[in-house]
Length: 107
Length: 119
Image (cartoon, one colour):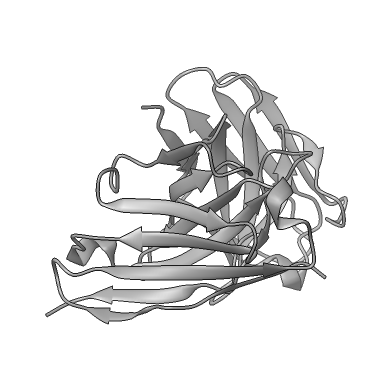
């Protein structure tokens, strides 16, 4: 099975900061990667799919990049609403594997 | 408006069974693959199972294969998961999610229902 590893596990940042989260796959997955945001007590929200495509309605300060085994989620100019946990997710036909999550907290 | 509403969660003893329904509205349910994703308390997300739009194909995580069965009733716009031989490690919030036709990812989620496996 392909493993997904996110880093860091926790990230402390301030409003206005540029934040980068990394996700590494244990083998090449082309661009079959998505990013989700989850706030406490809420369901996840799709942000990015196909590694770099922005889901409709998601602010443009979110961007994704990468292919193969290394991927990044970047949040430009962090906003108060962005403090949450972020998950990468491999998708392969009907199978899905999530990373362990990165919590973005207020510095 | 797309809505997914899970129900049926609760406390069940180890070895017991539970069936969770997820009622869908606001879209053509029979045109979309659907999934269950769970989250243990304080932990990350874990994909559990997916069923194709017609119901003819089903897929499971290794952790639940042979114990859980996903199904759907397109006439009732309802997704189900039958959970048997439950273990303490199955304790989690269970979400149903719609698989987007354009992105192949989960574009709508329910609010989740908590299943607690404990004696």
